[in-house]
Length: 89
Image 1: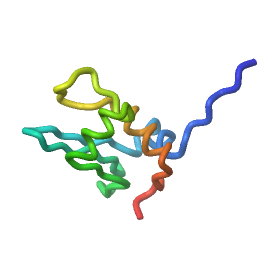
Image 2: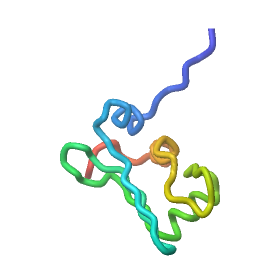
Image 3: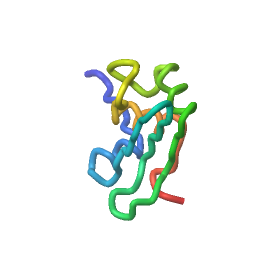
Image 4: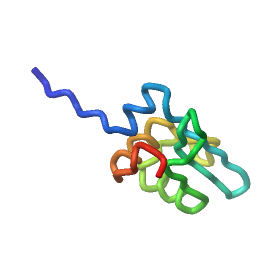
């Protein structure tokens, strides 16, 4: 029987609808953040060059470049990968 991949704490809360991925892109500027759906507090935010760098490095998945957004699940997976706290500080 194959082993099931462990779901990280950020992904667990996202799948339960407790977290939201917010993103916007315009004229060379960008913001991607994960926030608590109830309180609106951010767990983490990435801005501008950091966002574009994470897309170029393959951490944030995008269907096309130039793009109008990133795949939410890839943002969640990256947050778990780097150890973001699953609750606002």
